[in-house]
Each structure stands twice: as C-alpha cells, then as structure tokens.
View 1 (cartoon, helix red, strand yellow):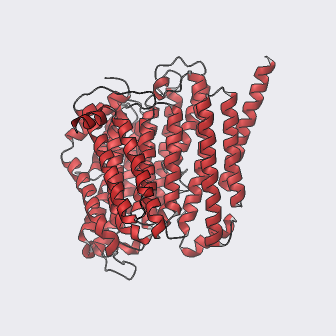
View 2 (cartoon, chains in turn cyan, yellow):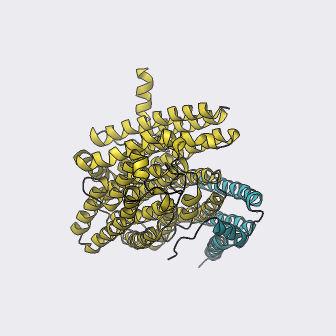
View 3 (cartoon, helix red, strand yellow):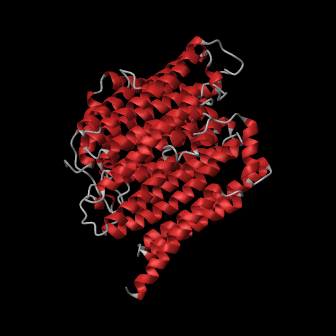
Length: 107
Length: 481
C-alpha cells in the first residue's frame, strides 16, 4: 500500500468523522451557536471528502456555496431567536414553545 | 409570437426555470406587495403551462426525451414537474389573502421565496447530474426554511431552525454521498448508475444511502421528521404549509427518479433494502403519530409521513408497476394534502376543536377537508384509492405480500384520524375555538376546490392518469424511448 493511499484513507476517515460529529452537534447541540458551528464542521468534512475523492472543481464550489448559504441563514436565525425568545439555549427555547401549546405524543 | 412559443417548447426545462427565477427577481424588485404577488402568479402560471405542455408532449403524445448539458427530462420529471408547478401556483394563489398579515417590506420577499422554492424543486427534477440535484434541493430547502421563519408565530422559528440544522447536516451527507457515487461509478450523471460497470458496489451503495437519507429527512419521512412538527404546527396557515407539503412531495419524486437509476447489479438490492426499511418505519411511526395528534396541521404532517412510507415501498419494488404506483400515490398525496391544509386554513386555530361545526359554517372548506381525508384513507372514487390499489397490485405482482400490509395499515390509521376530522366537521357544535377566518378563506376557496375536484375526478375517471403514470415509469426505467 503506497503512502498516497494511506494518506487518502486517513483524510477520508477524518472527513467522515467531521461529517458525523458535525451532524451530531448540529442536531443535538445545547446552544444555537454550537449547532451552526456543527453544520459548518459537517460541511467542511464533506468538502475534505470531496477533495480526497477527486471531485470536480464545480462540485467543490457548489459545496462552498451551500456551506455559506447554511451559515448565513443559521446565523440570521440565531439573531431572530435572541429577539423573540431572549435566549439562544435550546432548552430555554423548547420551554418557551412548551408553554405556548401542548406537546404531541412521542414514539 | 409563435417563434417565441416554439423556442419555449424546444427548451422547456430551461424555460420553466428561467420563468421562475426571473419571476422571483421581478417580484423582489417590486416595492408593492400585492403587485409583486400578481407578477409572481403570472410567472408561476407560465412556468406551470410550459411544464404541463412538456409533460403532455412526452407522456401522452409520445415525444422524445430531451437532454442538454445541465438539464434532462426523464419520465418521473415529465409526470411530476407539471404537478408540482400547478400545486405551487395554487398555493401562491391561496396564500395571497394572508400576504397582508406580513409587514409591507417582507411581502415581496415572501413572494420571491415562494418562486425560489418552486424553481429549486423543478430544477432538482430536471437536474442531469448529482451536483445539480444537491444544489437545487438545498436551494429549495433553504428557501422553504426562510418562508417558515417569517411566520408570525415565534414557534415557527423553531421549525425553521430544525429545517436549517437538519438540512445543513443533510447537505454534508449528500455531498459526501454524491462524491462516493461518482468515484464508484465514474459518472456524475444521474442516469450513469443504470448501466455502469460498478467497480466498488459497497462504496456506491453507501454513497446512495448517504444521498437518499437527507432526501427522506426533507420528505418528512418518519423517524427523520423532527422538523415537521414545529414547522407545520406553528407556521402561518395556507401558503407556507402548502409549500412545505409540496416540497416533501418534490423530494420523494426526486428520490424516485434517483432510485429508478440504481438498477446496476450489486447496487439495486442495497438501495431497495434501505428504501423498504425507511418506508415501513415511516408508515408505522407516521400513522401512530397522526392518530395521537392534537394539532390538526401536525396531523397532516404525520399523515404525510405515512403516505411517504407507502411511496417509498412502491419505489423499492424497482419495477414499472411499482414506480407507476409510486407516481399515482404521489399525486394522491399532493392533492389530498393540499385540499386538507388549505381547507384547514379557513380556521384560525390549529387545534382539532377548531374544526367543530366548520362543515356548516363553511361548506366548501368542509367538503375540501372531507375529500382530502377520504383520499388519505384510500376511499373508493378518490385518488388515494387508486394509489393504494396500484401499490397492492404491484406488491402482490412482485411477491411482496407484506407491502399490502403497509398500504392497509396506512388506510386503517387514516380511517381513524380522517374519521375524527369528518366527525368534528359535521357532528359537533361550533365552539369558541372554531373561529372562521373569512380573510384567509377568500382567496383560498378556488384553489382548494380545484384540488378537491381533481382528487375526485381522477378517482372517478382514472384511465388517462394511470396511462400517464405507466408511461412515465417505463420511460424512467429506460424500458421505452
């Protein structure tokens, strides 16, 4: 096994770790800033994976554009949450929503 | 004039996209909200007409498939793009009455976002390669999330946040999945996997699973539908709900088209197994949640998850009959959900109690909700019945007897929650919660009745629609040209 293949394998492993770790943070983070950071980490991992797998320049540019768009909308949502709820902690936001209406049954 | 029409017809996919994006730009630049809404309606109607003409030429008149460097039409796109464009037009028309509730400066943005959503989903259906799909899907998803975020209720922000977070994570998975598929198949074209000699089938299967999982999430398929409850339950009535529902429909359609190309040896079984697992889980969880729902809009979201599950099972059959069943089921889901959501928009409250006596106070809204509920149940003489019937037929034909179980569970659960809706409409007295919203209903009336009439008309005279679905499935699977 050549050194290039080993390096590519390691890079791909890092990319997967970033994508899965970032996704977990984005979906379960206790703070909205951490969640947006998780999305950025996941998309950075995806870009690393694309580069390692030899994706085209068009695909890399598309990935950057998607990452920027999610970052922009996520950041603007943080501002709106601070204005509406006075908090960016997910627990405080969920408590606010719970007080507004009854919960649905969970499965 | 005829030269312009010929040009539009010759480049129908590009023309539809140009009309939608151009309409969004013009709507955004127009300072007056109502004018911007009228201009957007014209652009959307023109795009719907172009898409419908293209679909008719391809499926009914036997025209040839068109392909360009960026865009391509397959059978699924030819069948679904007109449906999605028409439903988006009806949603925009119905949403006009609630536009005045928005701040003046936001009205043009809302209208432009609506067109951006439509352009994103239509673009995703016409995208020739995986990059185009990923970009279009996420453009549409972000626009949908932004529409949800501008709702008046602050709780809708939570729905938008969940959409953005899950969409961002999904974008990472989709990009990685697309790269793995391209690496394994050597082609970025969506149709490339159909006849490719795949050097690494496991890598290709992993790629497709990573590509499909975020689409399931966006389609609101259970258990990946954590965003759907807050987004549906707390968004503004009418416009946003209909857009979110049509988005789910478009996602599953795109998924059907992608899955139809995964017929290469070593790939088909893995993708089919993933779709079956997701479909059955969505049917069971979605049905259970719909039965227990106390918020009527969330009930429609959960019922949609169950309907999506049926479509996924039909797609997993990977046969012409299965794909045709999926398309009929998609049509039934889209029209039924639209009739239900827009009918429910006649009431300001979102609890089930809001429907008490609505059938007497607003007979047309009552009829629309009843037809939507009956279609979800799969009652005879509705589109839903055709969807279930074709799914059972395709499942039995392939020896998948358990697939009939999925259809029956969906229908039984729908009898329970749909029956509850109908009982409240006609057999209860109006309460304080059942506050009829005259303003919201004024413009929603016509689109809702169009959807309700379509649901019944296709159920009564289904031959033409079944023929179109069958030809679309044959085209998508490359069994005819």
